[in-house]
Length: 216
Image (cartoon, rainbow, N blue to C red; front, side, top):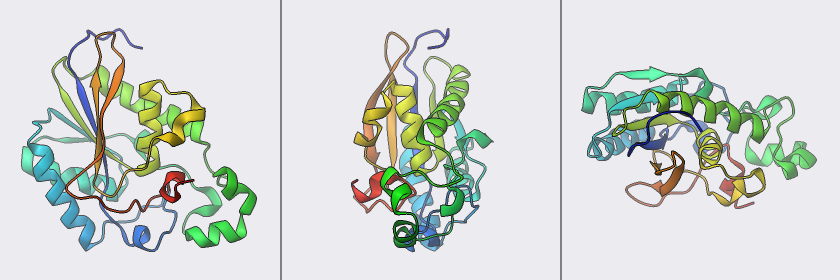
């Protein structure tokens, strides 16, 4: 909890558009993979919808798949995009670049715990991303709406941090599909309420670095 003046702030947590590695079911992590043609189209389509919410600030991970997604909304709204390195995706360690099947076959024990060797823990990601979100929200006026373009696991875990959820229930929040978003609204006590989750134009499969993509 911070000392900011309570208001009606909202934050939209927006996952980046599709990449070739999403389609191939490769763990991307902090590897800087660009949007594919479908991802570019998704970003522009979603941006037109999100512009209707009248955002007042844009923030993004500096990885190009998220930064380019945010830029699509910047073009529609005229708002500048700020970047925060603490919004990058979970460090996947030895898993980065591997397909889901390769991870399962080569690292069965780690796969069962969804803990990449040499990578970050879920708790580390939640703390890192949650702190980045808190910093941005401290700068938001009481009636402001912040859109954050980031990554599937990073956003789900950062969202869990903001909501104050204990780690044992984090997996109960499903993953975000490409270019879908969740909305959190500020409560009277300065805490946060989940208003929408995995919203978008049409339901799409979740192709992510997040454990919840497989329903496990």
